Length: 434
Image 1 (tube, helix red, strand yellow):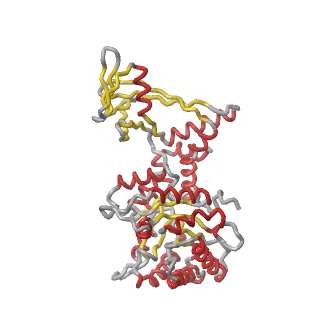
Image 2 (cartoon, helix red, strand yellow):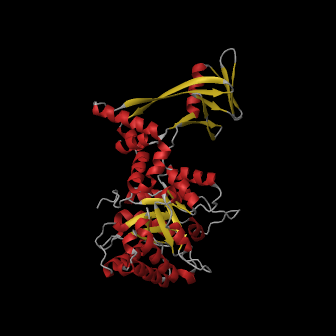
Image 3 (cartoon, one colour):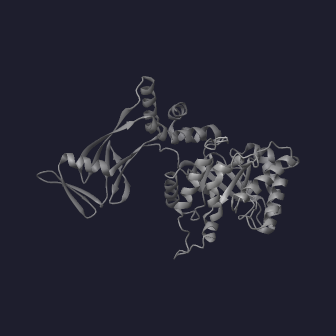
């Protein structure tokens, strides 16, 4: 097996949404599962995780396993996303591992009616690679016991300690060996809270460290092993802007999925990696990226970090505390260094179609022009840059379109949302490029 090749139907997972399986003190302990299974469209995640571990009290987990069966058996056929329950597990506790095994056996029993709608299980608190193999072997036993196809249950793990982080380095060597079924691996999910505890990390405020290295390592391991990387939960559910910034930072690492704690976060995470509806220019204003306002075809900067004035011989551009005396050509070059363009879905499709037409005509590279009129302090400057497109550029910029196509193919419940967002014409063209 080539571990660089994705082995599951989903190429991308944008949203990993967890729900407690049993709520104590309620007339219906499965009420939160009943609510989550009704989600549709942009509120529904790519992967739903009925959480029979941390989100559910220990004394409620047996009942939680039964609730998963009841809710999924009744509603799973109509749910638009994949379903991957999280069971208990711990690298240092055989009793906990056995309890997780027993819950998987119960949930996967065809007589209970849920397994035909379940895609796999999420295993938390894994340790070194031998521990991953134990979980895999338990799942193989469950499959054989219930007459399921070997490897049909996907396994996702949560990286919550140093040993599991190191284990990711061994996946390319271990996957595909006849002694295991680790090809069933699907997602590598960051678990920053327990990871922080395991690392004995301390911050002055008690907040979690950002752990950029962990997110990079998870993304790298997923890429090398043909898996999907998902970031951990963002606990401040009211901080929408912070959640967006976290996702933008992740996406630059190739980690396009994130844990979602609320349907509101699911909507944000479902939309975040998709190309914007409208393209826009951003200006690096003394270390801060500022989106320019488009007014009648002119891109306007309205801030106090950058200023521009005319002199008898040219211009004075002030950025922070630095003043630059420039002529017209120098000003254009300086602004080009400060400006970036964020292409819309329509822009990306246009560029891909143009490059594909050029390839058909026998040309291996073409120049794409980006131009704008920028206004700073009432002074307008025309800027223009050419970007060379070759096959490598095409392949790199194909990722957001491939993501869009994967979403469209796997989430028919979002077709109307996507058409409303982009327009039916753009959606049709996006499905036909690449």
